Image (cartoon, rainbow, N blue to C red; front, side, top):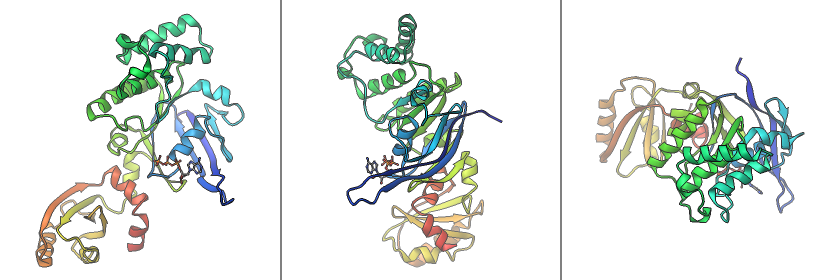
Length: 322
Ligand SMILES: Nc1ncnc2c1ncn2[C@@H]1O[C@H](COP(=O)(O)OP(=O)(O)OP(=O)(O)O)[C@@H](O)[C@H]1O
């Protein structure tokens, strides 16, 4: 069995509120992350991702439950846990009044790393992240992309076992997202476990060994992308964009041959079907009878994004329709 680098046991966080009734942001999350995995932690806005990642990285104290890093309780010994984890926060928390090199060296000093070793690592990381030429410039002169690279370099200066990335590619252009991902994959190949949150579903679909989907502070599902897809009632979805979309079309479309369920997402009708080759003619005939205009029709296999919608936003609607 693969070794576990991170374990949470019934992890909870309740924030104090003005009304006096605590707000339960995380309601008992239990999960294991294996050594060497790329693990995606996904959920809609307000699901409790940041609250969880802040507890996992010792930035926030949990209300109850425990976290184990490499078998040792983080709650009992946060300083020891910090040696094994690297953190890339969502916001730019670099020291803007220092140069890139100084940011790296001061980080290493905090972790008690020998000066010569720190200088050597800084040389290597600045080179690897394409920052050698600008290493003596103040971070306040850096572009967003350069700052993001430096944040990752800093997070791995003390050679952590696991690195936490909170939406690392948000706001980056697609070309730069790819570069960043290549760097993370290389890190992973060298043995570093990667734990990330992201809003882009195609990233975990392509790159994560396993993903967890959380909603309203609770774990909804955890597994490989294929395992999560297997939780869907069907394998294929026909997407229909009609002019003058009406709620009533949902019920009507459920009567079409081979259609198991129907939802509307962002004005697009989604017809769930287990058939590999659904009867598109029947669908087109039905649209004709409606007397409306077909603006777009597309058939595709269930994606991680569909699973995400099924397990979060649309769950009740689809369950109710069963
Ligand atoms: N400091 C706080 N005090 C009170 N409530 C908070 C605090 N921080 C977060 N919350 C609440 O806890 C819940 C979870 O928030 P959290 O930021 O963890 O979600 P998230 O999944 O990271 O969302 P997003 O994707 O929008 O960043 C939300 O309802 C939020 O309003």
